[in-house]
Picture 1: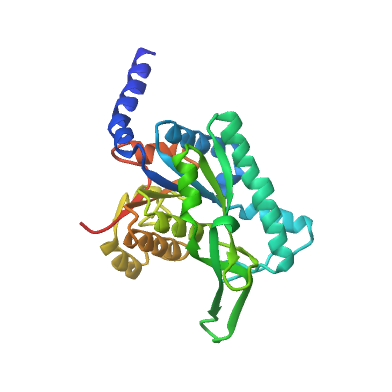
Picture 2: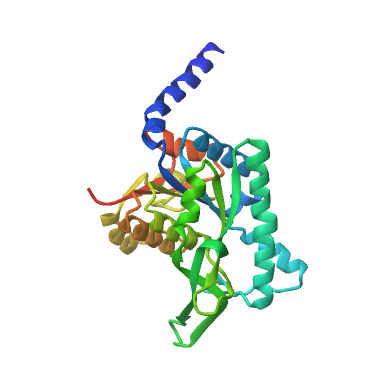
Length: 295
């Protein structure tokens, strides 16, 4: 028993220089995937965020909610429609997205942070701070124009609102929504894209993506093949080898974009691992993939 106490004390001591270093820094955390579906995993993640806020780190939390939206659309009798991985969001769908993302997913996170962990968290909905442009594209095979409806990419971020909350000790909990720069309509925004836009605009110390994968794996079938450190110069070669492929392609490209814009580090971690966020930030070895500029 005494050895367990000593080990716990050693962990705390190891964290001290990291706490001192990161105190006062801005960190954007994006959570999505099955982590949002497991109450146990979500509670552990939010306890990590509460700890970070308590030791003086300014945490900005961006969340998705795809599975909750799917369930709500099913109840409403709206069949899901995806084109090249993006949800097609018509006028009826965007109403469901807004209702679920604001009043179900966001509200639940706020309740847990405020009541369970006694830190101050407040909603900062994306349509209050993100100006968006309608996403457009062409089918690579036919050349036909693709239409995702009310799906937008951020073109501007009202950083003052985020900074004021963070400086006041409040955790902004941000929904992936935006307002169209031309039509003033509500737009659905990919949560990864929203997190990158916010991190870039605020030039944060760290951007952390929490999902249900361990990070970048050299062999997707082997969790032991985790690439713990990825430099931007390694990316082209790993793409050519097929290591960065599929759903990892846009995520790594977004991470590289953030680094090039001034974000110091980007991390990919598995939210199913207990306290993976704290382990990644406050220990020497970390548990996921850290992405950084070439040295």
